[in-house]
Image (cartoon, rainbow, N blue to C red; front, side, top):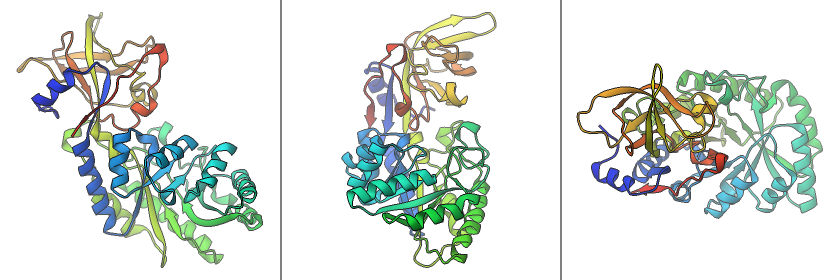
Length: 386
């Protein structure tokens, strides 16, 4: 059964393809679930802006009361324009430019997640010049394996992200000399698309050990930010349209040791928006190969690069297949002049004919935000289903 009603499919067929379609009702249900489950424990949630920045999507997220997790000056600016309070904006990222730091200081954002000694020193210099006090959290590399694709693993010692535990004494020595720096938190993020909740248990254990190191030195930490990374079901999206947030937050409640007065913060992106978005395309041709047949779509890696970049799987559906039609195997490919422009090989789909509307599911996260104009291609405006 399709995730779209016959009436919705008619609406989708009236818009020029390719375009992204967003189910705002599902997004609202997801936000309600996140708010309810995190609220049981008093946890604070920041939305990871890098997942999706459509205005309608951001409006629902802001209205839910969540903060914004940003990884560029552009995202900070977008969050503030979208109505997020500066008091709920966090700026992370391993390479913040001087201009980005200055703008964020002027906007008086809540916190910088810092990843190196040079970054702390530069933020301090600019804060002194502007007469500001910069609140920072140290992004610490806990060396926890996320068991996910190596391109989206961020918590190992060989990754570019974070401060190594062995660097902490030197970092604290620098902070003592920085008059315009206020250390308020510890930040951790070990990767993305994590489906094994035991990984988060391991993170909790490691965070407890690291926090004890600070406690032993009589350093008070206000905020423990455990990042995000909760994965979604790309293979069977209709069986798990909303991730198991209850189990996710329960892990941190059970295993994370929180001191009196501390806040626990999360940075969730994919888990919030992924299932609400679908890339809608049309079949241009069915091309016969020697050992396969190709379904050539008008959407490609310029619209959704994840399969080419991460070898990521997205479920593909023929929304306008003739009822009762047989299934055939297709290599589903795009029109871009690259051999990597392929959504999937040997995919079982109802027989495809020219003009059929093809849905590429679970594309609400890291889809439109990573689109490009390679081959001078253009992405059509999104459609929002309410």
